[in-house]
Length: 340
Image (cartoon, rainbow, N blue to C red; front, top):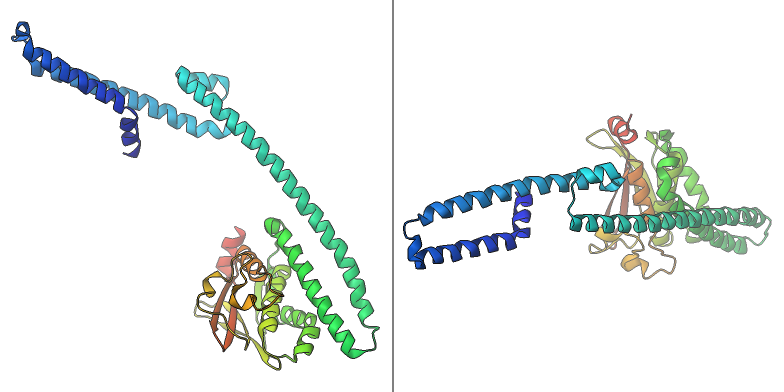
């Protein structure tokens, strides 16, 4: 129906001219006494039927050409196929112009893809180069005897390490499908490893952890889930007050899926900020009060979680803290995710 309406709209000039001819003909039949014996209704019907058949023929022909053209435009029509379309001279001009535009845009797009890939490769190389001196500095920190100075330096080293790690995973995000291996892992191992990495920061703020048994095994990618947990833990530590506790525990929901909760006693997230906390570069009200916020951590965590079938949700009350929850896929969801 839409195609028919579009066709009729395109042919309004034809229809208008036909109506004009009918009106002129009817006026002539009325004024010319020599045509009194001719049935004007007979002539009108013959012309109307003839014009209708002509429109139907043109509609079938032109719509068929259009569908054939659109169905092959992405792969470029070869000469024999182009001739089979029986394009009019004007249509051939349009077709040639469209092909030229496609060729130009394809060239620009390919050049942009090459430049983007080169930039990503250079950025990855730079990140890996930076990680080497960071590792060396971390080893050197153990030889500093002044405990207070060492704690401060360890905190600054951790901040730098997290930023470099964040940039590394941001660069790899586009190709996560090629670097994704889902397997069964123990949540306890992942969580404790990330907490130990944050030890210097926790000691400075005197933050403790209340951790459940975490005996559940889940099906996920160990490297990417570690990054997600790292981002949620760093946020919890960043916004938790001094001498507070962070609670980490699991439960099984009504569908049988494993839920991992990370609960802090921080300032909480305002209701107007909640729908946007996973958006790129969005720091929110709390982030504007902290120079450390980049607005990338939760954005990357959410994007990575979607790629590996994990769902992130948050419940927060201002002044009472926030609870971030990771829901891991069930076996049947895992099969759909991997396509096997």
